[in-house]
Figure 1 (cartoon, rainbow over the protein chains, first blue to last red):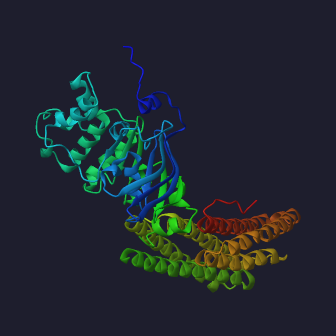
Figure 2 (figure 1 turned 60 degrees about the vertical axis):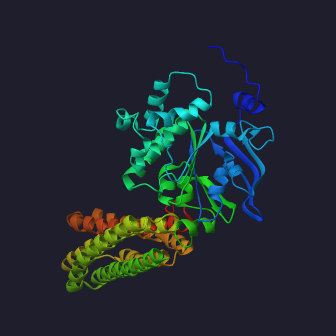
Figure 3 (figure 1 turned 45 degrees about the horizontal axis):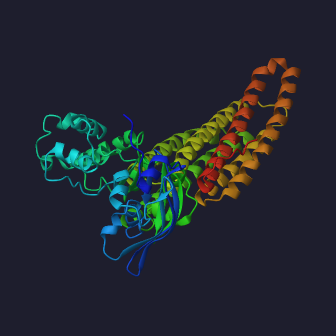
Length: 267
Length: 219
């Protein structure tokens, strides 16, 4: 099937813009009113890798994550400066529709937040509003399989998503996020509300998902960052202190502040 | 942070036990050396008997270090330190074994005196007693420079071993009927040479712990 050439500048960039990073920030600052929560963040995220952002509460990690797909636009008084480049296009350019940004850069939240609808409807909702016209059953099964949930819910696709366990709900949210075929998945503490077994499932899932998606995960759990990520960024008081391959950062950090934080000397 | 305080206390207890283990190994080696010099069989027996305590200390320290890893999940410098604890205790245990072998050799030598000088063996053992002490001190004080200086002294051990080897082979050539005694002493010299290598390995582990990089100190 021949696809029509995109006319929207952002869609066009996504279609044609080749960059070495999956996502790149240049001098990104995020302010809540007079308070600068993220200061001059310049970093690149490797394609199809898991990058973890760690740091103590209030260091700006979740704020930075939400800035990557313009989720902060929904917060009154929150202002972002600098650039967030996706396929070379700045997601904050005035003509860019944030809904489009979120279609390519999906998000999974701390607390599972399925819609109060059936499992099937949860998957189809995002795809439909993005104009999906393919085989719906195929999309539902494919997305649930990617989220390692299919076997558990294939017989209850029409049951309420709210009847699922917490861990299943979170995987459903991942399935919902991948259903629109994004390139990047942002995860904000995706397992902090889950028990260890569900946590372990999600962590295993990340390893599978990274074959298709670039994953950026914010976590309070340093062992989780060490287990699941390829690269780790350590933030403190809004600054990016250290950004390195995870093995290096956890065995031999270069900055004393990183060492102190990951060793539990503060935070 | 409570767990951090607990971790530091446990680490401090480990340090104390490692110091005890190092001191015990050093004592056994000193007793073996004295037995070698004087032919005192009772001292040689003491040195050998002391090795059981060293082995037991290794198990205790490693168990406690494993529990710390499991319960505190250390990273970075803390993790490197605990990894080094395992290496340190393993090498100290082997050094203790060599001290015990040396004590056994000293007893035999007392029964059948060697007509030539054993001063290179004595020099090696003397030097190694101070090397063991410095290697443990380097670990406890996180002193990479001391570790490097300590490892550098292994060259002197190697030189003494070489000198003794030539001398003992000469003795065997001239006294074929004493070949067994000559071989026993050559073996003792080889143990002391290996002992020095274990100290060097401890020093390398200490540099890794402090600086986070692997170095070869035994070129």
